[in-house]
Length: 214
Length: 214
DNA sequence: GCGCTTTCGCTACGCGTCGTAGCGTAATGC
DNA sequence: GCATTACGCTACGACGCGTAGCGAAAGCGC
Image (cartoon, rainbow over all chains, first blue to last red; front, side, top):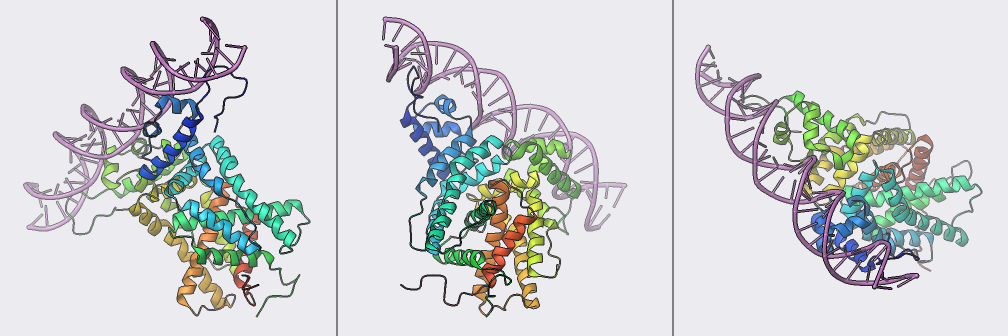
């Protein structure tokens, strides 16, 4: 996103309406055509702007789609649902709902694939999509700690590693379930996932705590 | 893969050497160019075959790359390492090593993205890549059950659901860690992942994690 | 050996998209 | 009004796509 005239700038300002129209047209094109058949000329036509206007704002297909898909994740939030389990299940269901939309399915994986060979693109994805999701993990853990559901973390580095692990497990599982296994991440599945996660995190090795044998 | 003359077939048989040369050239092109810049003409040149030969065997870029990437996963195996934890850690490290290769990174995610709009392609990926991985999960569980590390599953349907969940969690976590978070799935990380998984699976809640009431 | 069949390498082609250049016009700040 | 920037439009060369057509090569059955 590079709209909004940079304050003390002379000349005709860029149309903010064009930005939103282009991003919406990109998502519509993703739904109708998918990533590979999506052409920038088609997007420009759908948005009602000239192709040159599009090229003045985005370097190419990759950057455009990242921005178009990133807006889908704006709706992700973490309301207090009373317990850590409920919080996890809620946000995972939100994430799954986004990934169920065809514009997210085809667009997201494609730009991730491209980002393996484009460090700038990977950074763009990280800041506009991934980092926003990871904040939810940190927020949820802090909330659970204030509830007493999780112990406070003495080691900051260890805490960061654990958060990264949880994030990769949750996001990865939902993405893999939705896009690779191609089955819906419904309530039952999310409950099972949450259960494994919580027990994996709250259990303590037999040396430290009573073994949970039964 | 559609090589090997169909037995009672007349005429000049297809060159098996051409198949392997094309697939190797495809992986080389993935390394050098990535998915989006990979062209079939270039692959044909690298393989030393005519472009028409390539089109006679594969319908397009998608199918070709699936087959080229699928061969990377042939090396996945599950030797008996003595314990369930060691088995998991070993196979996850193998999986991570494959995903660390650039031809897998850029190729795999791209075809998964394309498969969201191409059911036949998704099925091709499933049978030639995903299903082979999932077998390792079932094999590992059976071995752990014979060791007594995991209880036998009374309900077959429930057992299948659990296996699918574990598979999505493990594969998804490694993929997400490697491609999205863009950090290496090294020994420490794999051990942490295994630990969370094992405790999450072997712990049994006395009642249930869900706030059943109140 | 000899035909039949299929594959192979090669060339050439129409098609569509890419990304850019150039131009006249529209919208802002001073 | 004037400078500056964005916009819509057209046109262009470059390139990859996927196919057609050809003669030659390599198998199989006889």
